[in-house]
Amino acid sequence: MDLLHSWGVELTVHLQTRYSRYEGLFNLASAVADLHTTFFCLFPVWFYMRRDTGVRLIWVAVIGDWLNLVLKWVLSGERPYWWVHETQFYRVGKAPSLQQFPITCETGPGSPSGHAMGVAGVWYVMVTALLSIAKEKQCPNFLYRLLQIGLWALMFLVVLIVCMSRVFMAAHFPHQVIAGVITGIVVAGIVSKKKWIYNASMSKYLLITLFLAFFAIGFYVLLKFVGVDLLWTLDKAQKWCSRPEWIHLDSTPFASLLRNMGSLFGLGLGLHSPFYHGIKKNTNAAFQMGCIMISLFLLQLLDGWTFSPENHMTFYILSFGKSVFALLIPTTLVPWALCRICKGTEVEKNL
Image 1: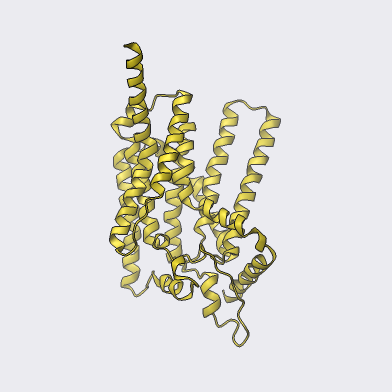
Image 2: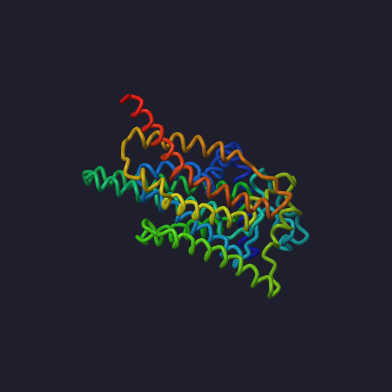
């Protein structure tokens, strides 16, 4: 593995030296590829454009990120920014110097890349949804082929830039981002074929949320019992990150787990709320656009609500609650409020 890691470090040095002028682009790519973008930006848009695609986005994102967490614990992959300081591969020779950035100091294991896995899965869902819409609209074969080639090429470009950004930031080795892309597409393909996710009951949402959470926690406890410390990477991050303020508690495995469980549970609550069942048949374009715009605005306000990491338990609980609320806003709260406003306006006009 040391030889493979050394090749990865050489590529990181090459990217940081040759493409340093694209630092802003790589920063943006890593930020946008985070699943936070799916929950706070993409979901509200797709939910009102095509409800099934919005639901599928959340399932793919949650299942994919949960699997990413388990795989990281199993594979225990290194990260470039700490590996170069601890490896004996270079022996008496000088180890390469890697630049660090505010998003470099991830605290979990490195393999597979969560950003690469997430962006591949999410884009797979969106591309297949757009192609499905084109088929439903009976798009001519020639135009459909062009659209097909164009969308898959765009996805390839986006995924490539995200993978380059993760290597550029010294957060991942190349083989880790490749593994992430492959795993993300496989997960998206499998989950997309499960038709029951579109009509899952509230009890099923609750049971799956509890199963995923307790499986991950139980797996952690089991490995810890046999002497495997799954939080070994946190010590390495604290030791080798060049600036302590770049280490964030929300990048830890348990913070990610609770955010995802909160998102899935919030989706179930939203879809089975009595408010939602009263407004889900409203297909008015102006109403849907209003829901999208207001939801995006409120989600950006919610996103600005951050918590102190001093008390870990409080931080995790509030993170879970925030994720639940983030899914309730577009699925139930906003459309319900708009329906009430519209009904009130109609009554005033009649009077």
